[in-house]
Image (cartoon, rainbow, N blue to C red; front, side, top):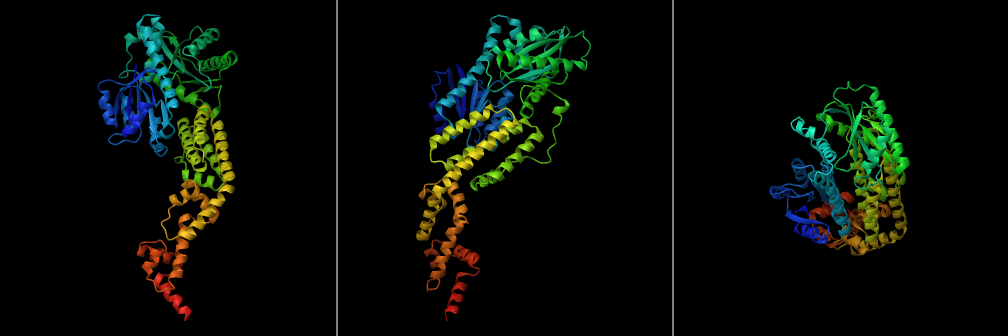
Length: 533
């Protein structure tokens, strides 16, 4: 059984998570619950879980602090973070700590949650299978070697030193690393466990004909393949033309994977390294190089430190998204302005070439989309399906250009939907203005009037301004002041007049009246009487 800990400050949410899954059926058990990060760490003192499910915003110690502490304890624990849409700024931080999954509470359905857990279970069992095979003595050397290399790229050398005994057990004592190659398959490619390594090993045996260079193949924690190019200790230091050789062999491997398996692969190559203590750095370099496929396209060989990867421009300022500006453009049907905004945004991302920043910006844009749709659609189930579709489609995008086009189309579809709704909803605004003119003296809020005409609050507010030319509150206040002007021609006190038109506070009534008319209520009454004489 895989152990699970749930960390959430609201009991009802913890109960819901526990109840929505048949844990025993999927081979898991909830071994503990906590209401904040500090309680969770106290639980872990008696034993680490395999999977941690945690909220982001919690008292005492929030989810970000907890995740950072957990990562100091173990790099192997799978982490699922839960968040509300409005908490997304906090969720950005979690991306830096190798979070396995990110789920939005309002969209969390039992089946989706179960699929996420099963995916993490499969990942855990891959590691356990490696360990089990090694302990049983079945092909001990390659399994032990792979585990050793996986730990090396994850944790690095202990206190800057390699355990010589472990290096000997792995059969690597007489060799040294030169480069690390990271193979990133397209998102649509999901080889069965072990299949990818078997295929790559078979192809390398056919195309690798260098006697002076060896290689070791192993998977990382994410299941992606890596190749460490090695040479024996007696060989001369690596020469410059070896990188050309590696580029050539990598291109052959990419072509073979495409031709024989239909797989699209990108290979990132690290800078040169000559010590096992530097393998973790080489892995990070190779992964970063492979991530540049986001900007340069799939099916390529990308080399750390090459001129094409050094074209990144230092940003003059932080890149931020204005959610309010995007929402305003959507509600105003400003397709051209919105397109220009997105073009500029993705242009800046292309210049910066920061793959993590692209992920964060993409998620922010997605949050804006999924926040706007419920405001303009009366079909809650359709909106939920659309959100799922968005997340699935976004996960398949692999280049910045694909993301740019996808968001352009998604926002245009939203604007078009709003345009289609606009003609039918104009009558709702007319109904709202008529209601205000008749019942101005009652308490009328944006929420109550939007509910009256069966529109969401945000959508109503924007549609009202577009149709009437002023905000709901400005319109309501103006109507009340016009009614007050009529009443002030009589003998009623100014404070009583304010109450009669729906403004209970005399001081506030006087302030608003003067702001709109330019004079106080008493001054207005005096002017009217003077004119009437």
